[in-house]
Amino acid sequence: MVKRLLVGRPLKTRELGQAQQHLVWYLALPILSADLYSSVAYGPEAGATELVGLGRGAEWLILPIVGATVLLLLIIVLSYIMGILAYPNGGGGYSIARDNFRPAWISLVAASALMIDYVLTVAVSVSAGILAIASAYPGLVPYETVLSVICVALIALVNLRGVSESATLFSWPNFLFAACMLFLIGWGVTNDVSHGFVQPQTPPFGVLPKGFTLLLILKAFSSACSSLTGIETISNAVPIFREPKQMGAIKAYVTMTIVTGITLVGIGYQLYVKGITVKPNNTMLSQLTAVYFGHGPIYQIITWSTFLVLIIAANSTFTGFPQLMALVARDKFLPEALSLRGDRLGFSNGLMVLALLSSVLLVVFQAQTNALIPLFAIGVFMSFTIAQIGMMKRWMKLRTKRWQGKAFVNAVGAVVTALVTLVFSATKFSQGAWIVLFAIPLMVSLALMIRRHYARLERELALDVQTELAEEHHVISVLLLSDIDRIALQSVSFAKSIAQDLIAVYIGFDDESIAAVEAKWKAWGEPCRLLAFKNEYRSVLQPLTRLVKRLQTREGREPDHIHILLPQLVPRVWWQFGLHNQRNFVIQAWFLRNQDVVVSTIPYHTRDR
Image (cartoon, rainbow, N blue to C red; front, side, top):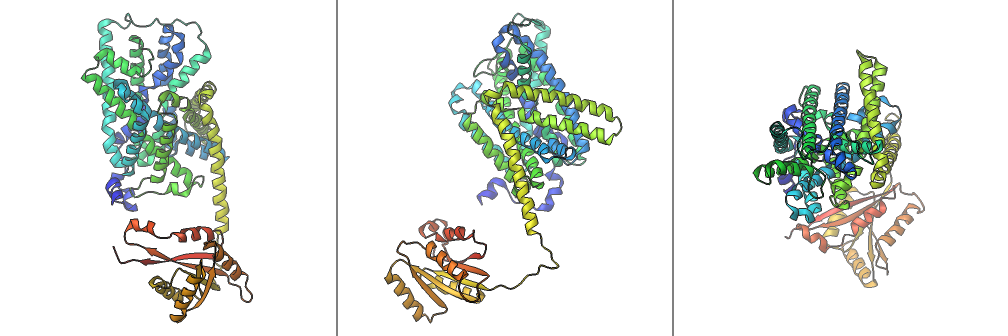
């Protein structure tokens, strides 16, 4: 009842193909682009943070950094549009790598890197959203971790209700944030026209400050590239678009690129013109908004829309991550349960894995965005690089129309994203990037172990239906009794109805209880053979195990299987279970290791309430 209330009614499998279970592109756009677009709130600031040590003279560098970020955005989006045309069933970098590289570990590196990045996306987006609100309301700072975990739980709950319902709920805050950003940029341009595009507080342009190095600017650029996480989400989630799915996904990509590019350039330029610098517990976007509007109603609207979109940005990951895990699980590299759809036709198991892992990260890192960002973006750029090289190989192999130009675009993208990955890994290694670089090969090794397990199991379970026929076995049934009562009546009656060779067993802890049961059994007419054992150590498992071993090696015709029957008292009220001995669960777990022993329970349902 509680599950139905929170998640909704179960949906039939045939409803999966119905239109309401898929999204038109302009509704899918705010859901799937929220991760990318919301990062404009912290991406430029992440780049500026790396240059803060150089002083005011380095603040102009935010302009070329943002410009290079937008250029890279165009290259990567163009590559993924070509990927959608080639791979309409989604999967992004994993599907591309699986199709174009023979060794399985290459595609698994792409998948593992993306999955890590998805988890980090949730943690970074939520923590950045809470930080945005804490910038306006400092009293919330001590509660950032708790609030972050609560937000993750709420997003997971909404997504458990299905894609269409999460789209309906989460699309409007994304539209509001985009409107706020464009309004802020437009207001800033109007201000620039009135007061000049270079103002008294504008930092000097073009001066290389003391301490400037190429490595430092590359480090700042790679940090600013955290703005590009989430690009892959649309290509992973192509199956959720309405037909024609590919065209819908391409429209979403083009619109997302235009709006994100304009916003990044506009916000970056306004931060430069107004001389906004990095400050603890007060984001650069919050400072810029306060410069133009103070802390009045417009500031509150923009701050709350930033908070909402950063929280909701995690929602796009809750769409892409389960889809990716399902693809990998179908290839037998992850547990098969991750490829199964839940009551609402979503991949709910993968969704819950994402919620759990991201919550753990938030707790471990105390919801500090700056502590999480060094781990961020390495995975996604590693996946970008593999996907770009895979697409380049595809064009060189197929040699379709204009394949040289397509291969060149992918080659440029591969070089740039590989450079970003290397710089990010090297410069952020000691700040936590080593965790990601260690986790990826660990996940790949685990995936290969899972695949080998499934392959061995498939070979073992294969059946030749022509030669391997079912046959009858000799089975000894052992019925475990705790007393001679109505439970025994039901259990013995059922056992005699199915058993070939039945033995009743009573294990007592003193002579008096054994004598009493034997007397009752004899008075009852001895429905079958009874074996009574005494165990002074008050253990049922030990004498039962000895009996099973003795039966398996007894003289005469040895049994093929031993069937242990366990009477189980089932109270009508749930809390009464704890009032009764639950030894049956221990016995079942113990004998699971013996393939020739089958354990069954015979439930006895009480009538009282």
